[in-house]
Image (cartoon, one colour):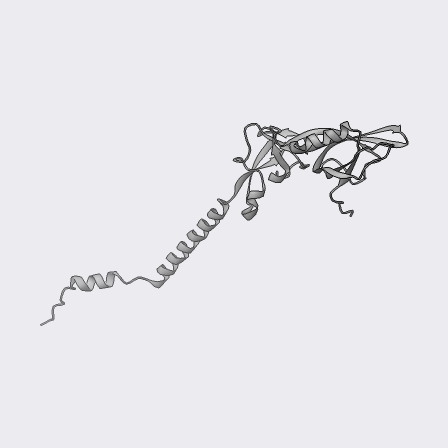
Length: 216
């Protein structure tokens, strides 16, 4: 008489059902790893911020607002705070205090308050020829020597430190054998009174660059 095969128990069937092919596990791990890599790349891309770029060359004294600048999404990491972002730009715009080339990111240090509460433009005449290194965008110290009785001048002193050159106006006029040059400067308002006093008292004005650019 033949033996009857016992039906498989439910426990035995479940045991067989949970046996998983190792190759399937490897495939799952590869998929999970790929998704993690994509998420990491997307997360890194999300660290880009919107900063302003000069749409054209900007010179000291220019007043610009959002219509004159271009927003560009860039990744700057720790340097992000050094450049003008959309949240930094006031509705009334900003005043350019240093030259900015076309397409250059706008440094926060190169712009100031457009309302003119901190800086104002003053044109001064200087005795003698301007140094060759003084140009638009240069930072200069303004020295003054007060005129004295007898035609002499007193000891010079700095009346405006760190002024920014906005424009050069050179002339060929010769007075007492000295060439006269005019230069327009951005001057802190706190120094305007001292500068105007020196000019009103016929002080000898000299413009001295604070640094000399490297010559390649």
